[in-house]
Length: 441
Image (cartoon, rainbow, N blue to C red; front, top):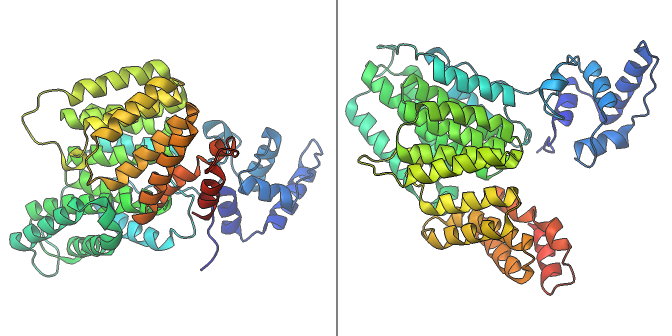
């Protein structure tokens, strides 16, 4: 297998067939052509440092790169480095005419995600997708297509099977993901080639959305952000065609969570705000407020974060007389406590953050093993901030054990990201051995 492409600059080179030395030469030529008669000292090692994240080019050098890649200089003001680079993919428009294409595109992305490990939609693309979802009316579904008829009994069986696959504990999904992806492929085949009524079409699109969303989470946990983004875009398209606003709001919440995770919290605010405009169930609104609070905390917007945390707590405690949408039925006081703690940690309130995170870990049901791994990593982070190294070591090791056992690479990465903090305490017993485990993870 080819080496993975892990940086947008490497992908921009890949699209043009350039090596690092080729790009350096292109930049030197562009500098000589500039009216100011610039000189560029960029060489292959400098480009390698940019692509490895060890350094970032200065503003003048970025303008030179923009000239080389034919990117308008104004794009540099809209998106920070390296997100303005060419090769970023935009999601397909929403609407029934594009739904099958989006599903097939997502399936291809799963096959290609090994190489384009970094790729995800830009902040502008996500904002546009959320705006379409909120404002466009779904197109009418076709009532008859050539092919075999699709009856209610078959659809009911497929819906029940999809619910069963999605309800499995996350620790088991690493063994059943191929079944879920095959189920999604079958539903897509029926939508593309079958003959069905409009009500059956609506149910098939709703099922496709649910399955694509589940598959997206699995790829996200693997760190395959390109495939996850494509699957969630397909899930949003299918939910839109099925006129399922609740499901669409849930998919927007997932897309926003990915943006927060990838260090682009500003890209998450607009989709979450759009989803909040349409979500009605208190549990759904609580989760959306909580996700937006995480985005605001990452941006350092304390007032907005505290406001959303208060609203999330109020919504979760509201009296409800109907079941929450499937995509947020797992939302609980444990999730509220831990994510509130994460927000407080980002805002510098270490003591209260640790108390909230510990409260959430204690409330979490045993069956939610992946979530426990994430929660434990968050707890280890808060313990390190409090300089409680021995306990952070034990909690971090537990998170690493869980995440490794269930194949959740994203959770492993959370623990691995604690390595710089642990290195500050390399003289503490057990820390060197744990750092060695992290290097090998």
